Length: 505
Image (cartoon, rainbow, N blue to C red; front, top):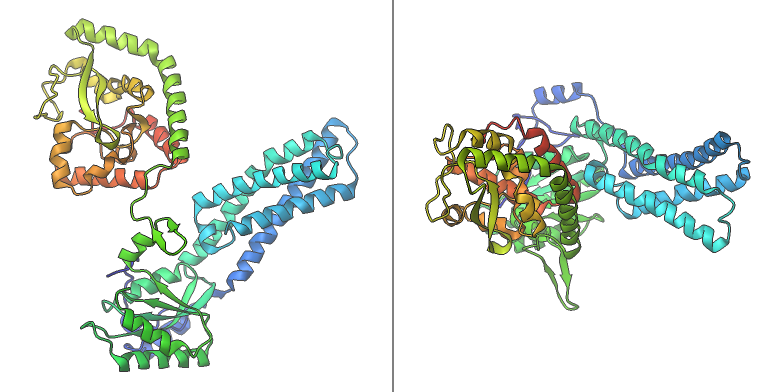
């Protein structure tokens, strides 16, 4: 059992955060004096932060609309609309933006700290605002009141204005939370598990603006419920509530300890507080999947389909468009390389080798020939530093990744993608699938010309097993975390690494 939190350094006698006192470890006089010298963190309710951010978005949305209308009409010397009409429009835009952002959870702590979610929500919110304004104008027959130019200007400058403002606010909030200078809520903690690990949980909660005012460690070493321990823990929690109110109770224990959970809920039923049961590492992986409602029961997706149909279509269209453009621009270079290979080593110019693709389906991968051998059997030796099999021209082609360019045809044929796990020779697949349990999951998406593992340094020869394990780990992270922006990021970083990667021989 365990929770995904880093273990904090445990200082003997420390009172912790926000007056935290453990049932097992009473604070010493020295620790009290040290705590008193610390600067008290700023305490704000979560609602105050939400209201502040929502107010900021409302004012920004208003200002963008009003300023765009004024600037456009002054620049072109056109008579602006009535000032009250402009104010009504700007207020409507601000309210629509705030309503959308609130509905999408943008003003929660997790929504603010998640950069990817914040950017996605801002884009969606600003699009929603303008589509709603156009629809309202159509319904009220007021489309002629405001010029299309002023609204287009407002739409164009809105997102570049909102994004930096949100980034500044998020960065400030992150710094305050990381420095433990901001408290958004106070809770009481029940913990049953490995002694000492509760300190890691407390440390993680601090960084989310959650102060732990007290903790009860429940002894449950032999798997049986210690009734006295639970009763004493609940009594301590009730006493802490009477002395200084907190807003919720957090319960950390393994979900298979059902009797313990029921006993804690029974003991704590006297307090009018919400009680949250946190998932351990195993349950957390299950709950991370999408829920399925069948009408009589709920299920959770324990293995996710790598890409939804719409995502596969988007990725495929992106592959076709980019691969076609690259082939168009690189065609002269590829023709020159083919002639150089033919002059140095004769034919064939291209090297074909069987690889496994999506779902383990075999296909022939194309490369410019860079070695004197054309291995494609059950025994394939990877290229090594100063490998005698690599030709003089081949060293240049492999170092600059030019030898991989024919794989753009594999992309157009649908056998590969621009980004994905790099395909290995079938002999290597057979070997590593036995040694590494999760190796086969790499075939859940199409293989790619480049991938997340490659831009993070796990490319080229895999002499040590740990290098292949890290490559597989990065590939699986990519499959679980796929997005169009991630593909673009990987392609960009690959372009920067073309001539600087030293792991290719």
